[in-house]
Image 1: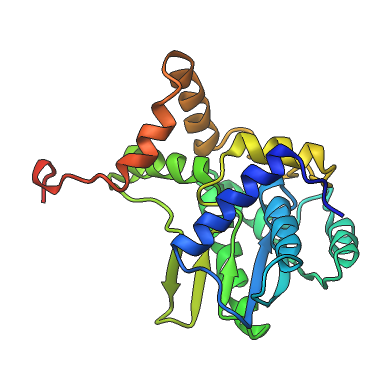
Image 2: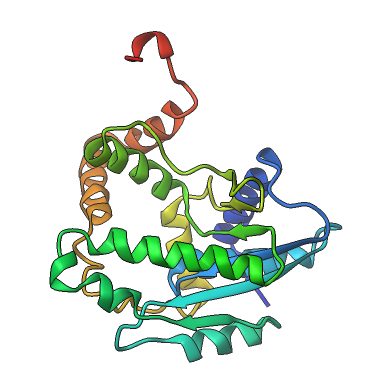
Length: 243
């Protein structure tokens, strides 16, 4: 049973608002949920399972884990956690991680591993008969992705809360789109979620880590920086952009 703390209530409100605002879930949906073993996806899993107890809408949850193939994996422990919630984990062991870290891929292993993992995640979603794939990205991820794309791809874009893919075959939803990462960290600790350590050797040196550190530094002088960046996504002044 979940502990109904102040952080839980805040996260639950944020998730509920996102689900309703962006029309993410309908009655009868089969929802595949991409698990990584980290705080975000485990929080999303916990909240979506708990939500079923309180709302008139029904949906089924089908967790998926793509094991990248590094030593120190935790697939069995993650499967046991899902069973404790009454769910069956679909797990696939791959070699995506080691392949992406070969010498010839050294320039960008994260991009390659992520692309391979995402491709298989979509395939398994369809194989499970699901038309919706829920991912655990939060508000901070959205802001960081905006800056990553601007700095390293030369484009103004980010993750969407609700996005149709492959001509409508799969819809990606991000129910934690409006949730603060700091709240998720506290929630995972309060609820004693089994957050697993990422065994990837590049986990601590990614571009996302650099952007996260930059935002932390900027927010020390101005705590409104992240909020302003997020609001800017819906305050686009096209007259002042090059086309």
